Image (cartoon, rainbow, N blue to C red; front, side, top):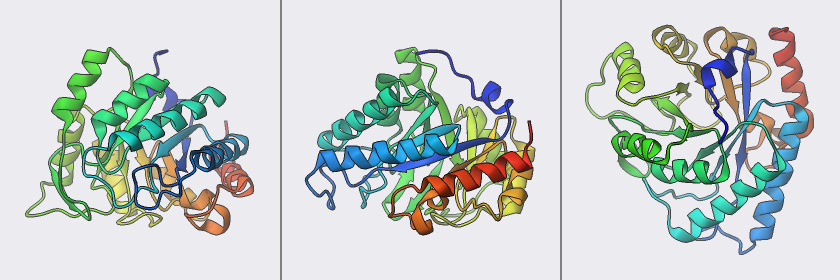
Length: 271
C-alpha cells in the first residue's frame, strides 16, 4: 500500500468524505438474498460521490442492524470485503472502512486487504453505553495488529460517538481528547451529534478542534446550510444523509445533492 498521511491530506484544503451505506449483508436480519443488488447499489453510490467531487469515501455496513458489538460473523465480513474490494478497484480516491459497531480489528484487516487508507473506530478508548450494550475500546489489540501487518492504515477515532452515552462521571473534554490521541494512537478525531443525521454541537466541535493536535472531522448532520459554521472548527467533514435523495438516509446517493454541497465547499474554501 502506498503511504498515505492524513496530516498532509488535510493541508490541501477542507476534505469531504462521502459515506457509502451498504444494504443489509448476508447474516444480518434484513438481508434480501441478493449480493448483486448490494454490489450494484454500492458501486452506484460510489460513482455518484466521485462524480460529485468528494475527496474520499467511507464504506460501512449501515444496513446490518442490530449490530454486533465488536465482531462480525464470517458470512457478513466476507461479503463486506468483496464489496469493498470492488469499490476500491473502480475508484482510486482515499477510502475508509467502518465496521459497526466497533469491530476495529476486522476493519483494519479489511482495509489492509483491499488497499483502503483509513478506518473509523467508534469507541477507541474507555467505554460507552450503546444500543448494542456496553462497548469498550480495543485499541491495545488494534494498534498491535497494525504493527504486525506493517500497514499505514490511519485510525479515525470518535470522541463521544453518536448513539452512545457515558456511564458515570466523564473526564474533562481536554483530557479525553489527549487520551484518545495518545493512548488511542489516533491519527484523526471525529465529532458527531447525538444521532445519525443530527448536527454536531458547534461548541463541542470547537473545543475538540482547539485541544487536538491531529486533524478533526465533523461526522454527522453536516448540510449545505450549516457548512459555513462547521468548517470554522474542523479540517474536514463526513457526509452521509445530506447526500441521499431527498435527504433520506435509506435512499441512494443523489449526484446533484453531492454537486451542490461541493459547490458550497469550493465557495467557502477557495483554492
